[in-house]
Length: 483
Ligand code: NAD
Image (cartoon, rainbow, N blue to C red; front, top):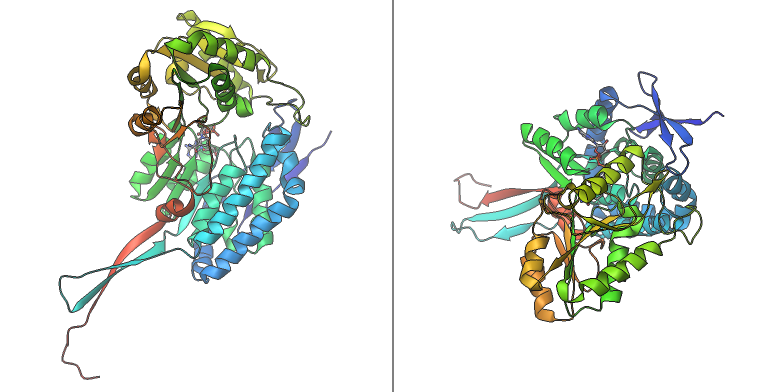
């Protein structure tokens, strides 16, 4: 069977790779080749940056209301045509269920609307100058060209989040999507073109991270790298950014903790914990892959979590009842199963799950892995949750902080002091009380402590990240020259 050959987009123009090479895009659900996509390398990455520099000149000079208009138009197009433009790609290449795909489409529209509003909010400042004959101002300016490098697990929503806000602030972008999900990114590029973004600002270079991504990262004409990906990639891209002393926004991995305190209802808490880890098969950066439960309710909680895990419906991605499907590829499955095997070998109890059929890993619950087990320390990025007991709030907080990551956390309690104490003392970019750790909001400052990243994205916080401040001062002193 022949498959479509998809071209990349450089400066609004569809083109093949200069080498003529392509790479296959596979459907995780059945291993079928969905498409062949042009393989971008350094030549294409650099060409896209040249286009984006020109795009920056045009786009940054537009009136805020014009930028707002384009972004709102993109939001309207997603609202009207999101299903036809994105649904199949999200399901086929991303392995999303229909519900997850619809959620991404809706969130993407919301992000574009929120970003559109930010176009008008590039507020500057003034401050009192000690010299009364001088006026001091602060201008807020776009950075220039932002390279948006995105992951596979939410291929539309995360691409929108990291591209719409820089655009609102007047930056031009170059998109380098995950090699697993280029089709969604190409459809998003077409959406931006249809919405009226200057073509020079629309490049989607479909290539591998180590070549195409690295070339963008090494390009001195890129003013900011906005990476959403693993902490390992963040380390490489961050180090490269420092070579050029340029901004980088790094939204990286997590090992988020959910604290279940002794006043929580154990059955309701287990349902919340299950939602927070098994969504999209645990391929969520903020998934609460570690649960710390007060010993007083541990037996009831673990029994309820086992039942919740075993009731998850796994099935056809287009069946609305299916709750999750396959992991993205075999390497992801191998990694998850290795984490589980290592935990069991080092003394953890496997309460349920622990096996895979094809690329679909069963919902898996581990009890009491040692604190140095890989599954406790490293991101598994699969449907695996580790549950450990704690005696009281202080120990629960200490266990939550026992991680190199600090992306998100959550606490289930009705005690307002316990909840806020956890919110203050857990070192994570967000802490949610009365819900699980996977929460999104287009206005929120999303980002991480520690190895979970640098910078915050969402609403006005993105505007701050994607702009530069400039001090401008004026002397009113008489220089003796007549007017
Ligand atoms: P990844 O780090 O493997 O890849 C992310 C992107 O970086 C891809 O486009 C890839 O091609 C590119 N890349 C890889 N090596 C590169 C290099 N040397 N130079 C430049 N670019 C390079 O991540 P992934 O497996 O696609 O996604 C899963 C990871 O993303 C998980 O760790 C997850 O927690 C994280 N993530 C974080 C957030 C967040 O908001 N913090 C959101 C979603 C996913």
